[in-house]
Amino acid sequence: MSLLSIFTSFGVFGLGAVIIIETGFLPAFFLPGDTLLFSAGYFINRGELSIQNAILVLGVSAFLGNVLGYFMGQLAEKKIENYIEKHKEKLNPAFEKTKRFFAKYGLLTLIIARFIPLVRTVTPFLAGVTNLKKGPFLFVSFISGFIWVTVGLALGNFFGTSVPNMDYFVTLVVIVAVAVAVFPIVFPLVKKFLKSNKN
Image (tube, rainbow, N blue to C red; front, top):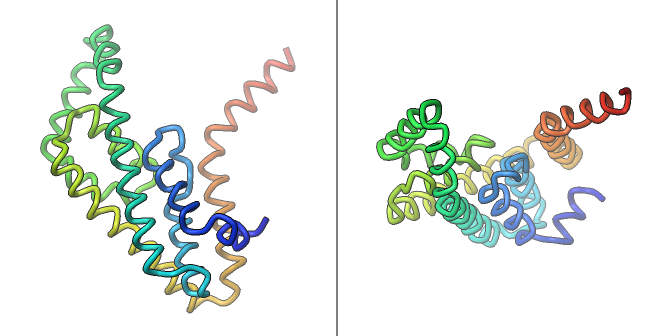
């Protein structure tokens, strides 16, 4: 299935669902949110997607992903604190340092994290664990989500005009991005499996 057929089948709401999952669920950190935004910008350039709908749906999706990650962090807070309490000497200083960091720089981190894979997924979760104030968190998450989406779509739109045969390039980039993200997870499992079969 080509990348174009994926967009045709699932549309901007399918991409929005991927962004929510990537941002809101820690195990889904490997999903290539930046690359998919870039790809969506390319399809906007081709007339396959509406730029207004893309910005609205994907911006809201980015916001909802952060909200989901925040509340997942809050749900996990007690378990994490109990675990830290059992390993107090080793883990408590680091946890307290993290809480102080988010109290001081948490809102700025939310903006910067949007543009960094993995960090984008971990940051709202940690914001929830450390009980960053909800009001400022929601406001900055909303603004930063739309900034990230707009930049990603604009870059895809620009390069869609400037680079010939961009459809092949975009498909390749998505495949490579997923492969690079998944490799560190899959390789140790495959290695362990092969080792156990030898024994």
